[in-house]
Structure formats: C-alpha cells, structure tokens
Image (tube, rainbow, N blue to C red; front, side):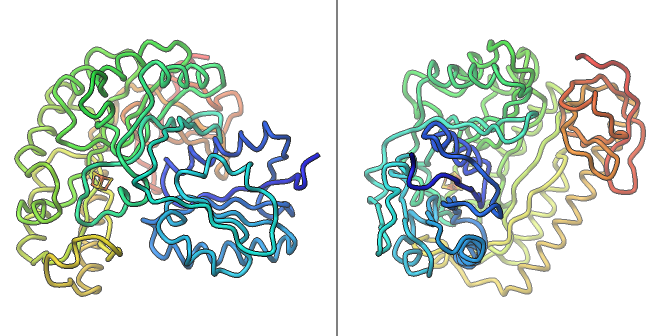
Length: 434
Ligand code: SF4
C-alpha cells in the first residue's frame, strides 16, 4: 500500500510540459496511485512549472497555497523548468515538500517520502543527458508527442537551454514505437513537440526529415501536426514531403520569426535573416497555397527602436501568413539580451503588442475568408461548448457545428460556409468517415 494514494497534477506552460506531466501521471498510475482532480483532496500535488510564463514564481506560490487549503496534510512536489532554474527560491515557498530538477523529474516516485524539511534533488543542467519520450493522453482527440528536448542555440532572450539542457532525442525507432503506442488509443491526431524539433538528430546519422518519413508510415494515426520549427531547419525537403508526399502530415506550419528587423535578429542571435524567412513562406505557399502558417514574434526586445518595430510590421504585412503569436519581451535572469540595448518602456511594449494583435486578427480573418466554400476534413473534439462542437480542419481553421455526440472525435468531410460572430467557421457536414 502506498503511503499516499491520491495524486493530482497541475501543468504550467507549454505542450512539452503537458506531455511530460501526462507521462509522469502514468508512472504514478502504474505505481498504484489514483489520479484525481486538483480540488478532490489529493494526498500529493505535482506541479509542473514553467520558466517562460510571466510571474512563474507568483503562479507557483498561488498553486501551493491553494493545494494546502484543499489538503492541508498533503505532500507538494514542484518540478519543471522553474524548479531547475530556481530550486532554492521554490524551497522557501511555505508548503513545498519536494523540488525536483530536470534530471530527476521522471524519478519522482523514488522521492515521495514526506520529511520534516524540504528536499531538493537537483543537478547542474550540464549533467542532464537523459531523454525520456513522453506523450499526453489527456483528451481522446489529440496527443502531444515529445520527440526532442533541450536546445543548443542560446538565443539571447531565452532561458530554455538553461532549464532543459542540451538538444537531445531518442532514436527514430524508439520514437516510432511511442507513436505506435498512441496509435493503439482512440487518439486521431498527434502533435510533434519539443524545444527545437528541427534539430532532431543534432547533425548525426538521423534527422527530422527521416523521422517524419518514418512516422508517416504508422497506421492508426490519422494526422500529424508539427508544433513549431525553426525557419533555418525547415528545409525544402521537409516542406515538400509534408505538403506533397506525406499521407498524414497536415498543411500547417508554425514558425518563429521573433523580429522583422535584421538588426534585432542579429542581437537575438537567431540563425537566419528576414530574407530566409520570406523564402520559407514562399516555398510553403508554392506547394500548397492553402497551408496555414502561424508565426511567433517578440515585441520590446532591448534596443528595439520604432524603426525596428515598423520594419517588423511591414515585413509581417508582406508575408502570406495566417496568424501571429505575439510575445511581449520580458527580462530573464542569466540571459544576454538585457545588455544588448536600451530597455523598451513597458507601455511601448504593450502598445506594440496591441498593434501586432490587431494585425494577427486581420491575417486570420483574411485566411479564413480565403477558405470559405472549400471542402476540408475536420476532426471534431469532445467538449460541448454551449451546444456547439468545435474542431480543426487539416489547415487549422477552427470550425463549429451544433453538438452531436456521434461526431465527437470523428473526422468529417465538411464544406466551410461562413465566419460566425465569434470568429469560428460554420460548416456543412458532407461525410462522416467513422
Ligand atoms: S531556438 Fe532559441 S528561442 Fe528556441 S528554445 Fe532554443 S534558445 Fe530558446
């Protein structure tokens, strides 16, 4: 019998964290623990933290406080990127029992003995070489498969290499084996996630192109989406394979640009200039003009002048892209960026963010409008949203239809009809492939 029996999880941050929480939860279940909701009086709380999230410390503190109100006698475990970066800071949060660094998080079961003092199990990130494949099985429709971890790029604004270590992955065979495990479940769509997934293989015998070719052969998975890939690693052969040859890869890319000013890209230590980025977009659109392209951009990087920002706006306007993810730059400890230029005042950062959010809305609306009348395949999800069922087409148009339980987790051929007031696309259902 376990000293503790009921465990609840909370994940902050990215899809990678979600896939890892899911894997850690399965380890607990295999160890005889019952997984419960956060407010169901668990004996153990596991909080998987993020270093990128604004106010990671505040969020972590709030969650620990909430956990202790729900179950005062519980054990609270903190792991994830914030735990790797600031273990001592976390250990001082009242209520925390165990802090696990990057190397130890998958060993959590071995450290569960509640002690009178906070226990920290942590190693310098330089010693983290292990790669644990992970995948999420939170909902029936979609799974996030972690294919790679860490990053060797050291962009000047980013703490991820400090929190997650060197770029590494399992071999293609092992990754395909994980995909086959997912294929045996009800999940129909797999999102390939990682920190720098295009770096799969790190220049060795295997590479990302070889991986996606192998994954495409796994029966039982209907769709793969690539979560985000660096533009300099998105080769012509990857683009052509995904858009022209693959059976299961969808026409959707998410590519980080970060700035439309070459001066700022240089300061960020990004590995490309705007010309390469524009060329990648053109290449994608050449193979399939209906491909959805999302782009990450950061506003307010140190030294970003009005001219730099306007160059970003003009560059983004010139690209045939579908939406933006806008991030407001915030200073991170132990990164080079703050020394590279004058601090951009917070109100200017906010204003720039607002301008790009408006541009994103416009891009998205143009993209959605361009799709009206087309026949696409949608994968409907499971939640009933006030009588509506939502799903995404292969090219990432978010679709709604009146809720019907027989459509849940089904791929349907649909015709896109009109954009509703909430910005979602209405559709006519043509065929249900179930
Ligand atoms: S590529 Fe740059 S931004 Fe992305 S994880 Fe690596 S260091 Fe961070």
